[in-house]
Image (tube, rainbow, N blue to C red; front, top):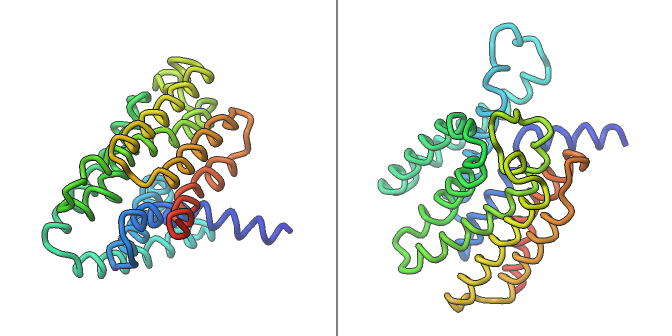
Length: 247
């Protein structure tokens, strides 16, 4: 059992799981697999590991096995990501560079605590909806749907992080408390449903997306294990993709 936990922790901490989640969000925007989805998968691994572990990758940690394993995964992902980048259309490459700039700016936006969840939702929406569908006539509506849904899913992360985030950051739980922050999440889900209904989108999967988000928010707590957010909540996009495939 301990070995399973070791592998599971590596799967999560190396950002492979979040990469799979963002990959699934891209696939929700497509009808078939393509190189862009895999580019986003490997790019997510690189981006998240850079943000989480950049301070690790110094000379003093060169003999740390855990650091070297994460670094190796990041380097492999970087190479594959770069190769796939040059296979994209020119206009997609330009927008991906804008997305990269947004990722680099994330630490600055993170200091504005209440902005953080919406900034993350915006960037992920930009990458998983706007870029691949920018020529689609419904891109704005679809982007708004995705932004509202992802913003609601960020609420469990905000609640989980509220015990470690500095009060000076003024995150949503610090401003409004846990219960009101959850209520904000529910409002975001309702807005997602309203937009989906107005757009006459396929309502059955949208209902499942909304219900799963509500459940994730409802059961979120400061006392939950980190597996709740980093494993189960981040699995929601994979669940949504499976729902869409069987719809």
